[in-house]
Image 1 (cartoon, helix red, strand yellow):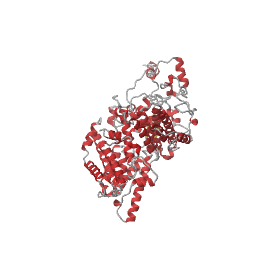
Image 2 (cartoon, rainbow, N blue to C red):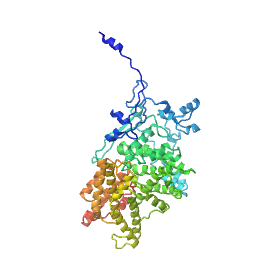
Image 3 (tube, rainbow, N blue to C red):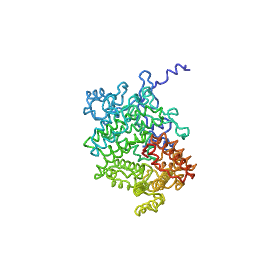
Image 4 (cartoon, rainbow, N blue to C red):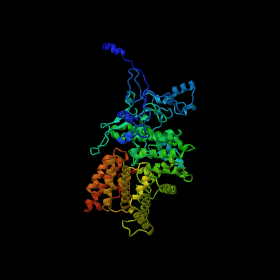
Length: 628
């Protein structure tokens, strides 16, 4: 009979084998079978969990202990490492390795992404990732302002350059707070997953308890960003994984913040305009994390966002000074900087300058119509027109549309008339067209000194008002079907999403036209206000999605019944962490309620009989909110 020691000796020694992995990362972590379907596996779709894809994620291995973070890869295939790169000599490879830390060299072989950027570990060099400039040598916000003040603003391009730069000096390269990258210590210790848990996320006591942690995974080695720096990889990964669903209510495969914007930033030719877009994306991501953490815990991320915003503006200025400009990337950068500073950041002033600069740039291409030649150009242009349409509703009726808008009136009409216009906001061409028409009626009524009531209207204006009512009375059945024709999925859930959000938008247009334009008291639209707010909370609670703020805002400022006020409060409590401008929206809405209550008390009448122009309230609070 064999002894235990003899049995032990008879066992075959373990042999090293090359294991292969084909499952998506989500299925690997859950330890379930994966069918390897692309872009998302069937198992994740069935369980309604995010499918993290199949890309190779590398992890650093501790040289002393051999320890490494599980569920990661320790090696990368050689043939994939060098795929897409030219055949370099040993001398050139040595040069790339020597230069990978500071990226100071501008020789020809550096025009492509240096594969050795992947392995940056030097924490001592505080260097600008773009041009090798030390951060302490970059201009401050005041210097940027002084330089821009000296610029000539004669041509549309130089006007964009000047106006974009003349923003708040706080959006400068900040070092005093953001001296260390996001969570870099955990990166070096091998912890590659940063979780914003309950202790990190500052919440209002009344906020809806949704996902209590936001897990942001990043790939420390195989970089898909232009520079490959760890901090930028982290922010870019957060952007593409977390933000698109917050920026498009009815999220689908057409979401440009998941595809168009990031692909232009990192996959296109590396130019000043794509660099500007790239840094604007990083700024949006950092502001988003700062909003999640709250004003106290998010100071570092906010300072990092300011630094990237300053770099975005510097690159944008360079691109505008170049004789050759790429329409899509420049306009995408202009819009992304505007969103970063005036939607994600808590800064309500200055977005009109960005709009004016973008109009000045687009007006140069009115005859060429690049938006008719390329899908990316169309997507970015329709987002630009959406910003034009909705931003004008914030203007008082006594203020005409700026003269510079008239330069692109024809282009705006063309874009609005396209069937797919407005889909990124969960609207459509008919509803957004009505907002545009309502704003034009608003200006005409203000110019004639309109008072509530249709008796004093001019004949031509009365015809337009009757046409608006006719449009508002049409059912949304055809709109829903047209929207569904453009959807990849025809599921019952998708149809419900589309119906709820289009009804929500339709109610917002009705409220805006009846109350803001025609100056009727809120009792006139009490039913529409209740429907919009109920649809809003149904959308948010049932689908965990983010609705377009414009129609919700129109309903909240006209809320006065107990039910509507409760629904509005629920929405405000749940939206403050979405973006910085939601805090200003909260202030305006509550001030409108307070003014209405004060006037009703003074006049001894019902709250529903008091008309309060929210635009006057916004002006009184010294706010100018971009409702995006």
